[in-house]
Image (tube, rainbow, N blue to C red; front, side):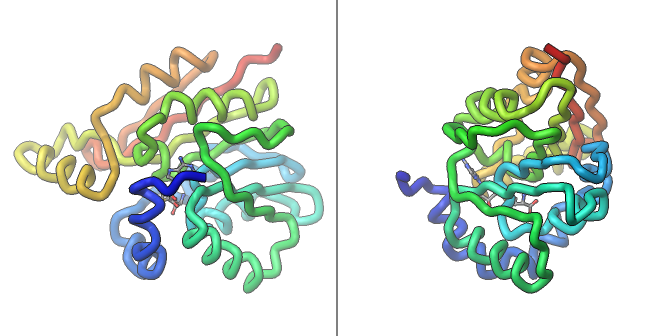
Length: 205
Ligand SMILES: C[S@@+](CC[C@H](N)C(=O)[O-])C[C@H]1O[C@@H](n2cnc3c(N)ncnc32)[C@H](O)[C@@H]1O
């Protein structure tokens, strides 16, 4: 796998991720609830990082029947996710190193979750295509991510620039591209456009 700028970024940031990101990455529990999981559901988290969302997903799963797959292309982030899984003794979690834009896991999921990962993927439409391919008919895709800070007045361009310096691009048409791919999409913006939750449903075949 080629070594992208984002993978290099996380070589250092993996070491401080859990101790710093709680300040800026919000809405995890609410987004996990929006996956609307049944206890035996299968979930794919794309760009799972160190696994900070796992416990919120697990709250909705029966550990003996539900399944959670975390995919990320950063070996450094996955190593920390592995440690988290080992610490908690979750036996229903599988970690996969792979690229969201080319992933092919050979199975379908009831739900696919992107949390603060989609805006970091330059080829993000391909990641949405792969996600749609991995969703079972009737399944749900939830995207939690930064938005455009529309209600932040003169601070908005500063926030967007700061995020861009950290490989996060907020000004892409995420909502439009979700609507092109999914039967129904509901988007909620939080904190004056700080972040958003998009819930997309795949139509039954
Ligand atoms: C801001 S972190 C979010 C991690 C986790 N989802 C969370 O909510 O804390 C973004 C993650 O997306 C991963 N990522 C970015 N581009 C990716 C790609 N093309 N394929 C797989 N993972 C990717 C990064 O390695 C990183 O772990």
